[in-house]
Each structure stands twice: as C-alpha cells, then as structure tokens.
Length: 284
Image 1 (spheres, one colour):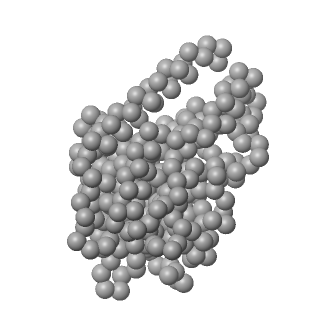
Image 2 (cartoon, rainbow, N blue to C red):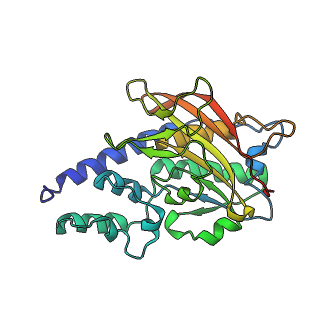
C-alpha cells in the first residue's frame, strides 16, 4: 500500500494549500489597535525583565499523527528513538517516510503568521521581545522559570500534556472517527460535554488557557485549539482585548472557551461559550 508514494505529495500539497490560504487571510487583517489600558491576560506572560517564549506548532508531529493514526505522547516525543518509536511493525517504506517527516523541525505557515503578529504586539505594547521556539528545542526546566505562549494543542505541541490535568477543556481523540475534540470535564447547566469541529456549519472551538507553570515560576498561555484556524482566531480575539478581565477577587488564571465560525476558511465570527476560573494556590 505504501509503494506508490504519490499520495504523500497529494496530501502534503493539500495541507500546504489550506495553510497558505488561512495565512494569507490572517495577514491581510488590520493590526490590533492599542487597547485603552494594558490587558491583564497579556500582562501575565509579557513581563519586562522576564523571558517569554512563543512556541510554534510542530507541523511534522501533527502530520505524523494523521498519517499513522497514533497518539504521540510527550514521553514518546522526547524519546531519543523518536520518530522511529512510532513505527512498530511498520514496513520499511513507511518507516523511511516517518523518519523523514519526524526529522524535519518545521512549522505551519499559519503558526508563522501568528508568531510574527504576536512578536510585534509584545514589543509595541509591552516592551518585550519574545523568543520564538520550536517544541523540539524545549526542556522541562524552562517551564519552571520562563513565561510561555503556546500556539496549539498537544496535537502539534506535545508539551501541552504537562498542563492537561489542570485544564477543564483538554483535547481528546474520538476512538472511532480519529478526530480531535475538546472535552468538557465539568459541564455547567446547559453546557455540552464535548465541543467538536463541524465542517457543515463551518465552526470550530478553541480553549484559551492561562495557567501557572510548574512550581509557579512562570505563566503559560495556551491556545488549545482543534485546528490552526482556531488558534489564529483566538489570538486575534485576545490581542483585541476581548478576553474577559478578572474582577474583584476572581482568580487571574482561567480558561475561555471560544466558538469560531468561518467563511471560506477565514474566521468570520468568534464568540465566548464559557469561562472557567482556576484556583491555583501559591501562584503569583
């Protein structure tokens, strides 16, 4: 089945075409205007005299998930045997394809566009110059000291697995359809238990999660989306100061679940579905 490799080029071409279309639409939008006052959300990760890392999506990791229909855990991802450890009992042809893809430290055009905008946003409004990082270049000690903005779910940034135990809307994989969705661990009255992408309705979902890093040494802002369209729309939403601000004694750490509707692959409407406050003792 893997002797004819032409299907790989068809798939790769389709993925690049989709990414390019989404990126072009994203880049043509107007830059976010200056907010009346500093946004508490961004103040948690863009701090002067502290290091902030923007983590791009690992495109190869996501593609290997789709190709092999496997769940790539953080342990697998960090193993010296990666990506060979994904191909047990695979044919030599498939193993060569996996080694080729897994050895490429690439990201998507959409992730690149978002990173460019975020970097300029951080410099202009918060006086911070974030470091741009690929997931393969990180180590766990950095999460104990630095601030992070993560552009994707664990499907493309396996490091998100470190925080899923705290999150109310983690990414799950449907065992029958192999499609990702957001689980609602503790539904409030009237809320759904799952939030799934609907091609027929042109809608997707994304969870904006602001969490303390391990040991509370830094803060982590995760754009935990089903797809890159969700990441792009959520970043735009947050840069425009639309994420609800904490009031009174409400915790600063929280998750904001968004529904994103699109037209022709471009986000047309982004709205808040739910907000979850997180109680995190010892956080700064």
